[in-house]
Length: 257
Image (cartoon, rainbow, N blue to C red; front, side):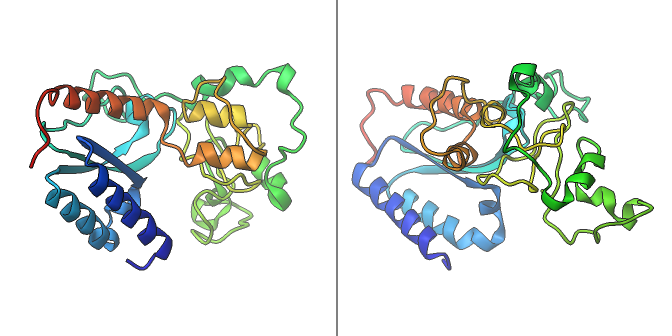
């Protein structure tokens, strides 16, 4: 493991698992944890857990499949001592799929449009785009800086193809789910509102499915980081219910030796 901070975090997690030996555990990280580059770390976690008697399963889940208005993919690893864990069934589908009776993914517009009222029209401090603000206004909702590239056929290209982060000048569409909410607030790294401004913290909470009255401590940037780093509560609820059902099957059973 080449990440000292990550190594300390994982080691601490596994030490706690060894000390407490709960009937089940759930570990979450970015989707990239499923990539080959992290296989050694995952193997270490699974081998340690299995030596303690856990049955382990891992999967990358898309929060949009569980009603979250955001295509946020995250890696989950679940371990249980006795009963077999089953991953929660999706409640929503990619709208491009016609082979399912599930409702389509929830959209950004359905989640936050009602917050964009005249009472909240003062966007002082929410200016987006920085020196590229005029360009941002020309980008269609649901697009990013690639709109201004020769490869996309723009008559006056401003950027080279894929020379910036995907989220650069990335603008939400009210008809699509949000892209992953980042942990850092930025004036040119999206997703940005389709009205060419930085999202408000109330909107970020909605896109993560936090309740409107959920209290966040600290300055705006600290609040944003808390929400951006979190598992969307609606996805967490789906996982929690399945884990609760698994634990209910273990009631009265002794821990594995």
